[in-house]
Length: 439
Image (cartoon, rainbow, N blue to C red; front, side, top):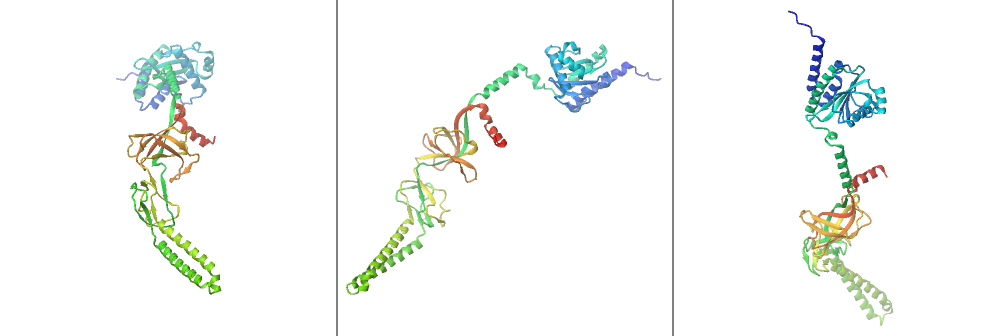
């Protein structure tokens, strides 16, 4: 028995089922978008189809990449926007030119075919999220419209399966977007107090600097870091071997000069030559006496003593012992532990218009949860290089309450003037842009 050949209706229905299967079998959203505008062309014979999602053209027939600013894309988006404004975009329908504006009708004649069917894509709540603009030369029959209506349900189901969430343009109504933009603009105008962070250290206030009184080698350090010292207490001893020898030589040279002066003074009554040499020998004795006094003074300087009560502020004694130093080289500082200030190294990029008396908060590395309040007192007008090579301004601040221990380090937060939130957020990007462009 021979099987009957399928008729035209059976062939159309088979193609219709194949289109539904291809849509549901799409692996990703891009493959589905391509199938929606191309696969049904053989069945319905349209010239072109445009897939719109959230009012924007997502795919076009025989086009791999959609040009967002092309004339056809702009025409289709404007036409569907007018359908939405008329409240007709949620219904499958044949679009007539009379329902569109005069400018859109002119674009239609130049860019699209004469007969257009609008196939909406609806979600489970029957809310519009997209649609197909299908254009051809022949009018659309009722049977074709019925098939397209069923095909639209299949296309919408397949699209929501791959992309279940609506685009934000649909999830957010226009009024809500305007309201959010207005609130964001108002927030950007909200005045915010500027602040920057900078490394800081607790340093002595009006401390006495102990410097090397002579060129020599340090023999011993008599105190330890942060040790309490009293006035007159020995702090540092220099190696006095060579200086003591110079003092002894100077003393003996003075004794010889004084003996010669005394002997010539006794012979001066009988010897004219001895009388003539008295002035020379007296000057030589005075010279030797000055050398001896200078040697004794240097010998006395080999012991460096404290001139006030306080604590000895320095890093490490071992790095000084046995090291040659020059006159005036800083050794330590004698400070009152109850008097301290905050030294801040502010990077050039963070420099704001700070004024004396500005609020400063110190958070120590050893106690980051406790804040120490201070007030800005002095600002350096010239940046100086730090040990790491970075340029920074020196700022000094006084503590409001009892200061922390001298030598502690932490992070200082400096508060400046109030500015709009937009400037607060964009200050660094704008500065970087200005430096990049050279403005």
